[in-house]
Length: 409
Ligand SMILES: [Fe+2]
Ligand SMILES: [Fe+2]
Image 1 (cartoon, helix red, strand yellow):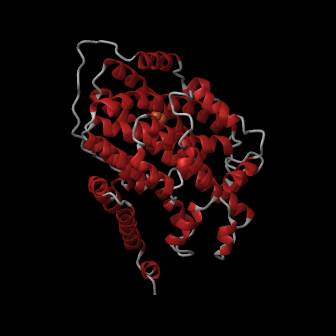
Image 2 (image 1 turned 180 degrees about the horizontal axis):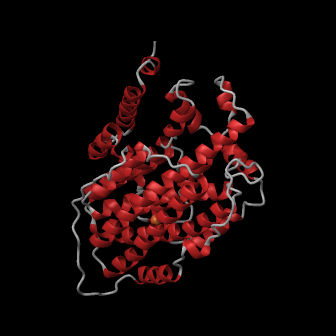
Image 3 (image 1 turned 90 degrees about the horizontal axis):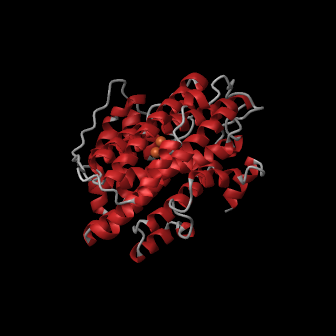
C-alpha cells in the first residue's frame, strides 16, 4: 500500500497534519538552493504544521525591521513622485463607484461567475467522479469563492507589508508613494471582503502556502526582501490572478471591482521595480544580489506549483481521490494554465528589469519554460490602463476559446 492510502486511513485532523507534513517535505525537495530553503524554514514550520491562519483568534507575526526618517525631504526620484501624484488622483471609493445593488447569483448559468471551462471536469470523470449539472455549478462557485478568499487574505498581507515598507524605505518619495499604497490595500481588503460577505456568502481560510509566503515577508527584517517579495512576486501573482478572473467572469460587479483593483496593482508593481532597480544594481554586494536572484527564482516556482485549492479538495473530494491525484488534476486544468501564463508574462520581465535575471540564471529559467516571457513589457512600460486594455482586447473571443488557446500555447 502506498503512503497516500495509509494517510487516507487516518482520522481527519491527523490526516491533514500528515498531508501538510508531506507538502512541507515536497517544498524541501523542490527548493534546490540551501540558503533559500533555510530562510523559508521558520515560516514553513509555522504555516504548514501549526497553521495559525486557520484559527479564529488574531495571528501574531513578529517583524524586526527598522523605521527610517528622512528629515532632508529631498525629492530624488521624479518618476516615483509622478506615481505618487497619479495615485492620489486615481483613488476610488468602492461605496460610490461600484453598484452594490447588482444581484449576484453564483449558481446562475446565464451570468457565469467564471467560465465553466476554467476547471475541466473531464479529469474528474476519468477518476470516476461524475458531477450533475447542478453540482458542477456549485463546484465552480466553491472554486471562485476560494480564489477570492485567497485574494482577500493576500490583500491583508499586502496592507501590512505596504505599511512596513513605508516605514523602512529610506527616501521621502518612496514614503509618500507608500502611504497611497497603504490606502489602496485597505480599500482592496474592504472591497473583496464586502463582495465575499454580501454576494457570495462563502469565505475560505487562508491557504497554508500563501500563509508561508506572507509570514516570511512580514517577519523578514530586510526592507528590500519585503519589497521584492511583496511588490514584485506577490503583487505579480495577484495581477496574474486578477487578470485571469477579469477575463473569465461575466458577472458585472466582479468585473468592475477587478478593473479598479488591477489598475492600482499595476501601479504598485511599477513602484516596486523603480525602487528596487536602483538598489539592486547600485547598492548590493555581489553576494547579496546572488542571494536575491536565487530567492526570486525559487519563490516563482513555488508560487507556480503550490496554489492547488486544497481547501476545495477537502470540501468536495476527500475520500474520493488522493490529494496527490487532486494536485495533478488542478495543476493541469485550463484555468490554472492561463493563470500561470498571465502571471509569468508579467513577472519575468520585471525580474529582468530590476537586474535579478543575469546570465547565470538564464539556464534555470530556460529549464522551467519561463524564458519565453523574457522580452515582454516590464511594469515601467505598461500602465494599469494599458494592462486592462490588453485584457479587454481578447474579450471578443469566447472565454472557452481563450482557455483552449492558452492550453495549446
Ligand atoms: Fe492590493
Ligand atoms: Fe498591491
